[in-house]
Length: 379
Ligand code: ZN
Ligand code: ZN
Image 1 (cartoon, rainbow, N blue to C red):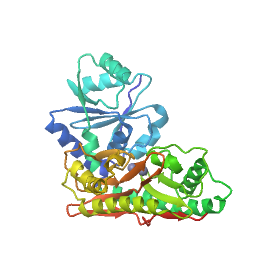
Image 2 (image 1 turned 90 degrees about the vertical axis):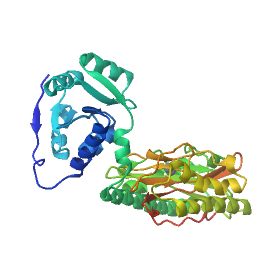
Image 3 (image 1 turned 60 degrees about the vertical axis):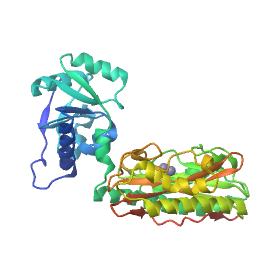
Image 4 (image 1 turned 120 degrees about the vertical axis):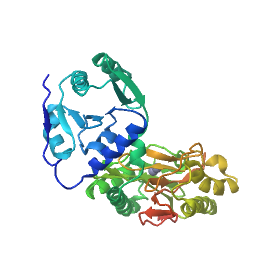
């Protein structure tokens, strides 16, 4: 096993890169917990702290250094993308490299991310580091990631724009074919194509186009069901652009909406508007959730809103913080969260409206500009 260590150029420059600041923040968070070293194995956390976008990477952060462990296929990429790190080449056994680093740095305890290490990974680590105490941790980097930097918010806004424009373009293609019969799967694929055409590297999750009774299932998979006149259709879509995700939902009706469809859509829209009015940094995830839930409960539909109001969005499409009844922690300023109330009535259909907002001390700002009215797909 070779253990090439090289300090890559760029780290000594005068400009401070975001990763330097993030590592500083991480080290203070580690200090508060008396952790001298943290092994970061969750890919999004690794990317956030190092800048490295390749998949096989593990980061060991100590008080004085950050070591990026990767194999020879990624050495060049790592050196370019992660100038704040010492690049460590690993072979088949990452544990041996870690063992050597622990000895060289005199590490007696190494913390690890228990939600991303597999049981097998933990066993190998234990075997490779018999002298080292392994400390399980959860959510340290995730809570740093929750509050976004201005440049991150710009990237998310870009991903929102791509999703919105792709959605509108796809609808233009879908409309003329409605009478001949467009399937959910075809609609989802059109949206994905339009997103990629506009610079998305991939969708941020498997896109949802749920029609008729399927729209009552919040996470329906696109099927071969054809859109029919009178259907409610829930479109839930997101794009990954430059590593950052968007997440957007609109509900449409095929043909003329009936009064009940209009009524339920209006209810969900009012619930979302109430949330926009009351959302701000400092309130808890539970208080945020209640802003919209109250409106739906007052209309006697509490049972029909069976999921939380929203979730953080950034490098991952579901990340911290959560907007849900059981969350007591205050929402940090700068967090980007989805606001997505929904009403789902089995056998009839569902309505969900989802937008992303960034929270400030004084309120929230909506990212994106797509109209929220019930969309009508002429039939
Ligand atoms: Zn969504
Ligand atoms: Zn969402």
